[in-house]
Amino acid sequence: MKNLVEALKKETKTLKIQFIQMNKDWAKKEFKRYENTTYINILEKYGILTKGFKGVEFYAKTRKSEAEANKRIKILSLGLEGFLLETEKQANLHYNQSIEKLAFRIEKKGLDTNKLKTLTSHIGVNIETTLTDGNKKVTAFTIIAEGEIQRPHYRYLIK
Image (cartoon, rainbow, N blue to C red; front, side, top):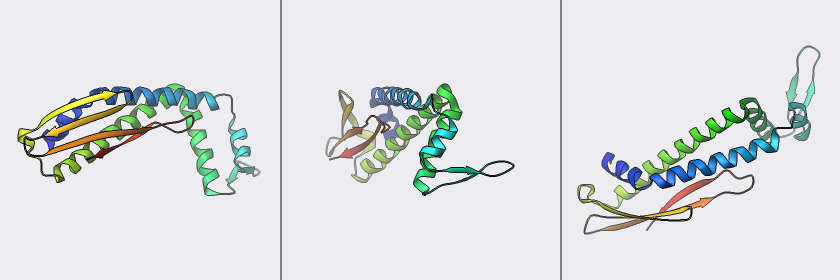
């Protein structure tokens, strides 16, 4: 399996570079959305009230609003550079985990990894890799999703 993972990483270097850059671009936009926001604005927006005499007590109307407020507070507390580093770390983790999952799924197809040959094409943000051992053939391709507030992410599909 280690050989297969290494072969897949070699074939998908461009995907990794592009994916990390997409995440950094998203992180810059996401930070810009909140950079002029104060913690109190965030707490008020999500219905989290502040009360208390010495110190502050927080409570949320819903768990979702509390999670959203915590996410935004974390982004602000990290600062732009910290948030970019955290985003890059998460993108690398996503890339490595997806390669390992893909290798596991390909291995289940019964390819002989010692005779493995690969062919990769990269069109736009999507990548397609065909792996063959001479007898069996497996094609893996990505589906990438992103949006204004949706962090870029992808999934491998195989056929």
